[in-house]
Image (cartoon, rainbow, N blue to C red; front, side):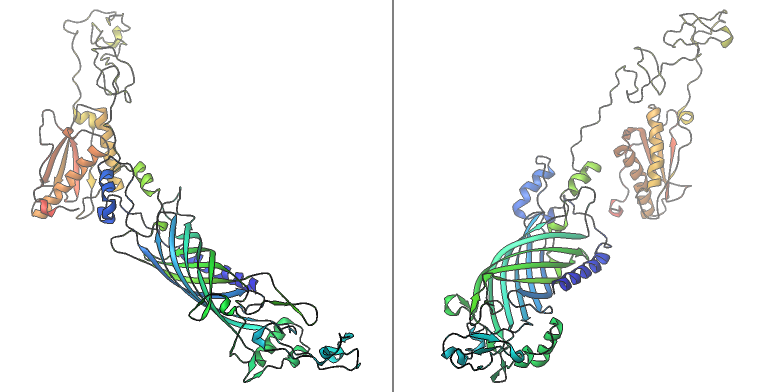
Amino acid sequence: MASKKYLLLAGIFCLLASTGFSQRVGASYDVKDSSLVPSKRMPQHSEFLNGTYNFPAKPRNQWEIGIKGGLFQVSGDIPAKFVSPGFGLHVRKAFGYIFSMRLEYLYGIGKGQHFRATENYAKNPAWGVAIVNPAQRYSAPQQITGAGGFRQIVSSQTGLATTPFEYVFYNYKTKVQDLSLEGVLTLNNVRFHKSKTGYNVYGFAGIGASIYDTKVNALDGANKYNFTSIAQSAYTDRKDKLKELKNFMDDTYETPAENHGDRRPKLFGDTFKPSATIGMGIAFKLSNRLNLALEDRWTFIKDDLLDGQRWQEAAWGDAVQTRDFDSYNYLSLGLNINLGAKSVEPLWWLNPLDYAYSEIRNPRLMRLPKPVLPDSDGDGVTDQFDQEQTPAGCPVDSHGVTKDTDGDGIPDCKDKELITPTYCQPVDADGIGKCPCPDGCAGIAPPEKTCAELMGSLPSVAFKASSNKLDDDAKSALATVAARLRNNPGCKVVVIGYCNSTKKEQQLSWDHVNAVINYMVDKEGISADRFFFNYGKEGGDCNTVDLRPAAEGETGDNTVDPPHPNLRKN
């Protein structure tokens, strides 16, 4: 019987796994959202946003209510029938990301049928007073025989066989209700390599109270069953015997089973017992509101009469009370619903590492110091790009290398003959060549390259229609522009947006230019004063922004107010 139960459990698990793991896992909540924080935790939330407290406030999270159905079984002295129904309800609330509590109600109907006949039932009042064998009127029996399948007793005084024993087949039907308060531990929502998961594994334990009412099927109409023919039938196989009993008996369960009477507390007329529950479960996420849960729980009540039987077979004419206690098991499949407005999912579905990991990757609330770019030789090129330590006062190129206009190996700051023809080289320590310098050759340097020559042609940035969001291609193009600006610290860039025939076009053109400049400042670290803000120009595509190096002496505005702020897109 147990093997069938766990085979069914494995089948249901595989079915749910095939659907549950395919569900899309959503993102976590926004820790800045004040509407998710209850008023009693608002001071902590304010401190967190102000940067004076490191931990975000715990958000308001939803309640879970669940309804479940499944198989209910009693583990006792009489073998249980496999198909016995059970029904349950619960309400659950998280106290943290790992621990939650739930209140659960269970109603179960358990049945059992023994396939072996018994004779020693005299102490069990549910089956009536046993027929007194005539042999007991005399002295102790002399011997026991098994003639014709009947157990008979031969009197030591008369030598005559007496009336055969009666037989019964123990059975029961019990109705159990319990109410328990359980602590639930979530086992897999703290994840280091994945934001969230589509399934949730948990264990639970709790205490509560159970009431039960057990009855037996002892009467055929108004008379006791005569099981003699069943007990003596040729069937020895368990399945065949149970099938024969099913065809022979009705399904009334009319006789109260043995119980503790007034020696135990009663509730609603049923036996009342404290109980303890343990179990495991796995829930599969269907959406942020719904999930399916597969559970198996055991309940222990320190009572041996759940199945109405506490006597075991012993020597002839006697029965011995068993020393074990009955328990019951409930295997269920349930639908759980999350309820609550302005609340996040129940915390056992969230990964508490989400905020820390996302903040490390893309800081939003983290307080970052302003970048300090050291320039140890003071040549205007930061150390991360500087290729040499330049003597003080010597002009350098964009790589921090001392300029040598004529390429004679003597830096310009020490070269007394700034332009030495190649045919006059090599030169001495003062940069003077082997042939006389023409009049006026000293101090003449080739003209400096313009920013247009240094920067070259710059890429354009394209936007999707009616959007001001930068895609990956646009960000890659802007990274190229940023690299050229870093290599040419004296150059500036004009950012040009197009179209101005309507208010919407004017505002969208402004949004495009603003998005490009903000990205260069916030993400690439280029100073805002190196950009000229031009929008609403004619002669270009409305969804394109062009960039070009600023001409020598060109001026323009670094920031411009939006023309129609009420039309700005989020």
